[in-house]
Length: 283
Image (tube, rainbow, N blue to C red):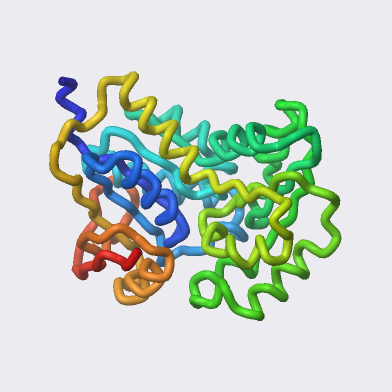
């Protein structure tokens, strides 16, 4: 067995949205341990300048590497769209994003029609999804949906307000076969979006596809953990712990200790001055 196989997998996002990816990874790889870092003090990334997003993402990957992770999942569409190649080039461990698996899943689900993409302003402006679809022969229609994240985090994803906002964003869409949910918060809005779109449009969440890619790559690299018991989850946040626990409960996050960390200058592991616990969420 590779001696590095017992180490945890790092996962990060600008906030709590990446917990949908963590949940899929935990279901796919129950024997693995995970460290999830949510940069809740600096959320959202979707409207920040690309150079700032790259700096934050580099600080986070450095922090996770200090904690001896065996791989890093960039569970943030915005960070992945802006700087995934740069992060991967600097990292001594494998780095995965969510965009490429999402494009692959959409291409497999689509017929010959147009594929829609919903995401943050930066994700849509980057053209990462659109270019991936173009390379596979698909036309695309994309729309930035900045109000979706606060709607999810306020716990009103299935409300009349959420439906009105979704209808506004989607009102001028062309005929679509598939829509990619290009932000990790958006799967929480699946019921509302399906109600607006109708059952004829398939919604693609890249979390499950990403989890399958990570599992396959770990096996190829000899890094799959072989624990018989379930692995542990450690949650790290740069902001307020109670606020994170509340939002994580809405998302449906795996249980685990929650520590507040100070990333500092990105060269040290950071301090932990608060500790909480995220209970198992009801299924």
